[in-house]
Amino acid sequence: MFVSPPLACLFRRGFSRVRAFSAAVLGCVAVIGLAACAFSAPPLAQVDEAAVRHYREGGYAPGAAVAIETRHLNGPVTEAAWTATLVQPVDHAMHPLIVFLPSLGEDDTAPVQWCTTWARAGYAVLTLQALADDAQAWSTADARSGDFERVARARYADDLMADRVARLSVLLDQIRQRSGRGEAGLQTLDWNRVALAGADLGAYTVQAIATGAATVRAGPWSLSPAAYIAISPYARRTPPEADAGQRPAHAPMLMISARDDIDAYGVVTDPRVRHLAFDRLGPGLSYFLELGHATHRWLGGDTSLLGGGDAARRVAPSPGAPNGGSQRRRRGPGAAGENRDGMAPESDDEDPVSEKAAKAAHAEQEAARSRALTQAALDMASFESVSIAFLDANVRQQAAARAWLQDRAPHWLNNGDRLKQH
Image 1 (cartoon, one colour):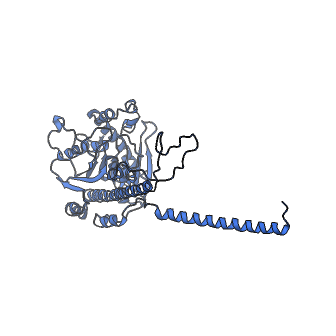
Image 2 (image 1 turned 60 degrees about the vertical axis):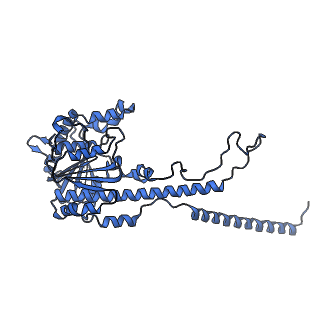
Image 3 (image 1 turned 60 degrees about the horizontal axis):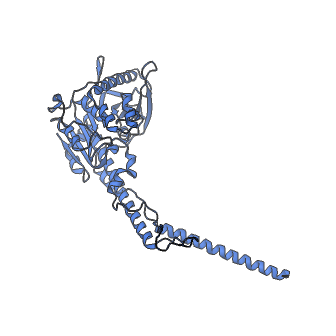
């Protein structure tokens, strides 16, 4: 068909206007759709910062946090290889020293939140795993076959404890001598004000040293801690005859556990065993902090798990609720509405009722995760306040810290946490 140039021009103008109008309409629809999605999106999990801030205000106040730095140490090349990690304030003042012994299967580089916490409070924290086999426990043939309990129980054996403490004595003596020679980064370690801390297997080692079952000694030098911290302490239900009686620690000890402090490898399946360890200490200025919601791995220093890990799952209601997103109708063979003629199936539109239920369930899950995250932050505040006050009271000999720990801490603790004293 022939169209004259004027008519062709009109056609082109009309088509351009229609195209522009369509683009504008589509743009508006897109904007409205995005706004609707943003408006209807369920809130994400978040910490109740106001509640945590209010709780911290009643806790122990050690002063402003200081800047810290991390340094990695290596043993001499002429001996069996060893490494250690030192986290300490960046200033050049002398700082009390905390020797930290990590959990089974972890080396000195494992990210432990507590080392950072104590360093920011003005302590130098030295982390080392005395026996390489303790750090590599989960690389053994038994571990690869899944027999984790056998591996773990073997590492708790008495003969290995003697080897562990002997090796620890050698390593600490080497580091002490390097510190005495003024080696950069080590010259500010105060070996006259020392605390010994550990988690899991490290806690069991701390217990052995604290009660005199083992001694850290190299030649004429011996370690004399002013305080001990055992996180997730260990005790046999039926101890050997030598351990049957109460054995007080040489210095005040703080044990930290939780109502759900059960390890994943089957050594401690009943949290009451942790209390046995404390009860056998006998009378003295020792404390047992029990957190109401923490897990074993969290106590070991891996606090990153609480973002979406054990605690969030424990608190979350609605088992079987969808993991976010929308639910759609699914049609299996023989389902109602199935297209039986071999042609394309019917459209699979979203079920408004199911979609609404999915959003409600997702919002409920996020609310549960918010409660878990908030509880994790409260647990963190409890751990920090009590442990730093304990260190300040016994390593720095600060009367105010001792008074807070004895008088105020038991009444301040969050619901579910408790502090008892021998």
